[in-house]
Image (cartoon, rainbow, N blue to C red; front, side, top):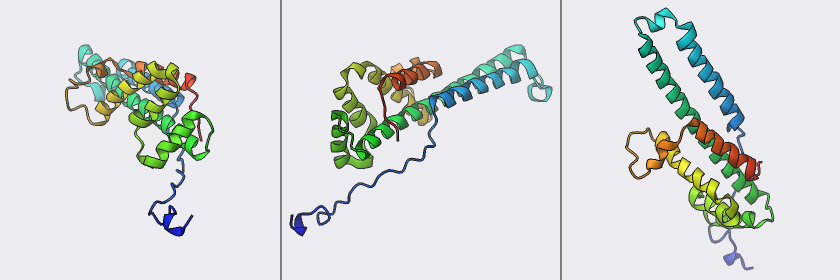
Amino acid sequence: MPESCSKKSRGKKPHAKVAFSFDHSSINEIEAFYKDSEFALEYLYLKACPADRFFGYSTGLLQAELKEKKAILDRMCSLELLAALEARFRIDYLVRCQKKHKDSLSRNFREIHQLKAKRVSLPDDILAEWKASFPEHKTRLDHFQKALDYRNWLAHGRYWQPNRSPHIHKYDYLSIYLLSADILANMGLVEG
């Protein structure tokens, strides 16, 4: 091929491999944190009840504040689970591209990678390709995609009423945990 037609002369750089940080949380780590934190909150509010912290609190006020703290914990851990699940899908995508797996999903991912590299969209590219390649996972991936609306609402501060996405109110830590466990147990995501 003449030099004038090579990739270098057209201004395209080969895509560099992504160096994984291995800092993403596992669902087991998140679950342990959730349980420990929930236990600590219940101990603080229901057993220890330090007088300098809860002076003047009625039982009703104490229980209401505990409920709110648990709701915050629920949202924080839901966000962490969804971020960890997104990381697993993005790692799967990159490993399939970088290690040049031979299956059709990996070949399709490499085509997407040639066009978009790191700008790949989780719902529009990665999840869509999974659904096309493995229709048996469509239902769980549709649930994950709806849970991503919840993640976006949490990540952007919950400042608006989600009228266009009323389904996000059905999500909580337990539903996100069960969805994550189901996906990780059944979908065969590859790791670095």
